Image: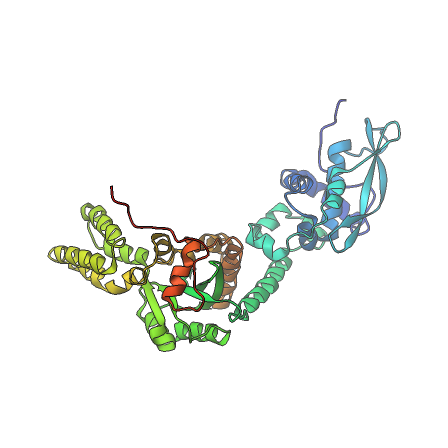
Length: 440
């Protein structure tokens, strides 16, 4: 069967939501932007996007026009006065799109074979087969569809059928404000947290501090976010105070994994005192030391630091002190950076943790890794109006990343940390692994 060339085309009869005056504008829009609209149809028909995603952003009008495009791919363009090919247009009728918990009434085109048999419209069939509720506007923004990209896909159609970039932005603002409020209200007294990571990131030259906790099952949870630098004593105190107010007990011992911020270290001391075991991030430490060395010294010092961190605390610190003394003559800044806070880079060794646990609990990478999601989300913003906007977008990125958090490395050995923190009922779930090297 010879198929006619496929071109997106709107129905000749006006739809109940589109006036006759606007039909020519729609026709022009489809012709000029077919390469942009057809990928949307492909996404829909192959279940890579849901009807709910389209419905909540573009509205009923976009769904009905997509049905017209889908029908056009099967029957070709409508040519009034011509008989058409093997598959012909046969008017339209009311239909329903299944949206999980509810249905949406739409006007759908009808197609028939030359001999009279009904021909289904692919997009309509796929919409009805997908009974799951689609992702909401907030999730669409998070996974890569910004208001600006949306406007490029539908430059004229958006205004014609009542769709606007600003409406997309408003929906995201509402959703992100709600998500941030829910994050700030999360109760923490229903989980037994053992380790808490705290570190700062920079978004559009603004500082944001994030806190992530690891509970006794090894699960990771976003505990809180706040605007400000980790070097700001009041900001970090407000963050910790908020965690305590939401149920983080000050009676338990915790392992805090932090960067080198003195203000943060002081705030932890103020609220938790001797119950806080502080581990300085080794990645930050290594970076601070190596950036003060010439290239020819970097690899040697990096190897020495890596080897020292695997030793028992006393031996490891002695090794690094020896190396710092060697560096002091020609590279005093690097030597001082290596010695600063040295003891707290070996806290996980002092606690007797296994190698796997030490790897996961000696750096704040757990916070730095979600920065990819934050950058993906926030990178689409061209201008931040204020710190609240930065915090909302950062929260969106972290909450998206939280969905994909894995359990901490060495989760089966987490009882070792619980025992070191004197938690009741801390015991292995299975036989401990012998990490001591065997004699040859």
